[in-house]
Image (cartoon, rainbow, N blue to C red; front, side):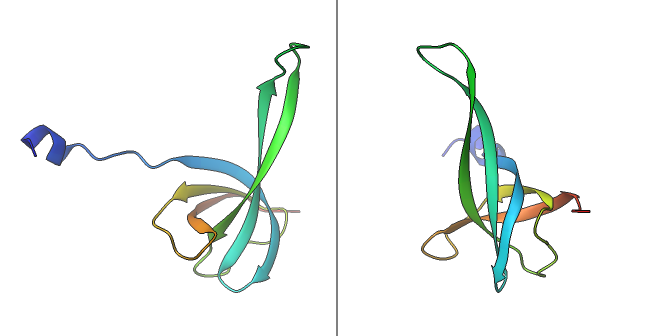
Length: 90
């Protein structure tokens, strides 16, 4: 490994979404919406995906806007963790 490779760190992917479920211990379900151009009609279509994210202190509530970041596999479906809460639900 060259010295250049040792000093550069890979950036982890991060996403912003809304918490939809907090029923599990230390785990939240985050819904991430993206806008994708429709190939035929050339209109933007909203697509959503759900990610399970690790919330160590159980601080998130339903409706909170959070930023999640990629991490090592924590369980079968959990590969993300909550980095910060951007906006609390009203």
